Length: 152
Length: 91
Image (cartoon, rainbow over all chains, first blue to last red; front, side, top):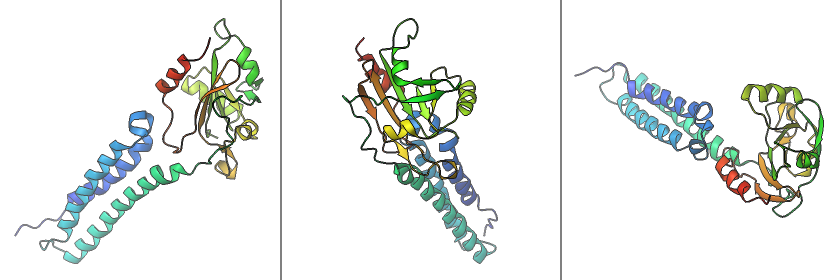
């Protein structure tokens, strides 16, 4: 009977689940096609879960040197891998939607409220000023306002 | 142009690092952010209020022509989508 000591699918599956999680925030978030819907990460998670299931099967096989230990380790590691997946789903699909409704935001056809704020050189500028300030020799046809969370 | 609660100092560093040449405005007291109803309470450092992501295209008369209030933080307007609407702005 073959004695398999190292349960590589289990650990590969666990590492892949970590990579599937982290790669969204460090890599795929920079490309709109992989950010808006995280299909690349979901594919990586699918592969990770297949490996974890294989690892679990190995851990529970009768050929292990330490059967009890193998069962416990493979259960915990595959459980952690699934938790990483659940946390990813939570961050991207659940907590990402926790945004204020902003019903009072200006709508199409309404006037954009004016404001007066400091630019990066501590100079105070207003929206109306920017609208009439020449850009490349002519007044702008419009302005895109991008509100964002900031980097603090 | 971009608006957030970041200080002019942070915006100076960030625009230099990223190579952005368009206007960055600081709204630490969420004055404009409140006026546009975009306050996300307590989400900033130390429980400070910040802006939720939102984009508005305003024409030269000051009228809003296009709005994007994303429902999910990870889903944002794409540049080509905005350029498409910008092309339709009157001269």
